[in-house]
Image 1 (cartoon, rainbow, N blue to C red):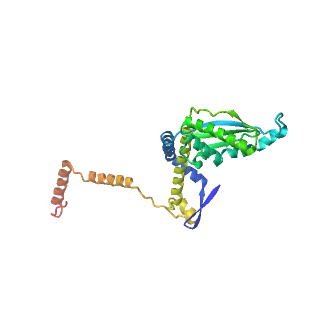
Image 2 (cartoon, rainbow, N blue to C red):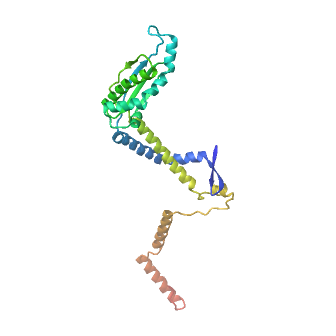
Length: 276
């Protein structure tokens, strides 16, 4: 498989295997990014993000057509109206009354964001869950919402009563943040971020590095290649050359005496000129 990228308005093919090998060669950078982002996510979720607690209470609603017997139509109607009951729990009338009775310093919008209502399928049970930074306050708000909503549902839907299936629990452990989840998510983001940086740098690099690149990108054949020594090799060659010259220029006392005798011999048998 291959994907295409427009570079300088020219169509260039990029091999997926080449990209994979590129990321494999930079594995240490990706690994360091995973460690770094994972540590940041761990510290952020442990020391920065506030702990939140959840308390849940449940109500059971049954609408009967007569006071003595519960018919199948009553059960079916109750299941169909469960969603209506769930909507009535979070209405402004209910939550504003809860805020007033508990003396909460917040608005309707902020409180409704901390309340979730769930209706399990094929049941007439409605679960009310409240999230708060204080576990005791989460329990108190959940019970109060259940009490006020029960009266409101009874008046609006004209039913006999709303039964309490379970009172609000006192949460012993925070529901969020999840430290392992934040750590793993941050590590994954670090790996993706580092890989993206490597790929972007690779895609923006349009320099020609090998003879294969010349044929691939320019559709030209190379006639020959000129080897170029790098700086370190050039220094070694230069040092070696200077060392060789220095060795040739060394003259010992014995060599100088021998050279003088040769000069004298040439002077006596030659033209009278001294050759050095």
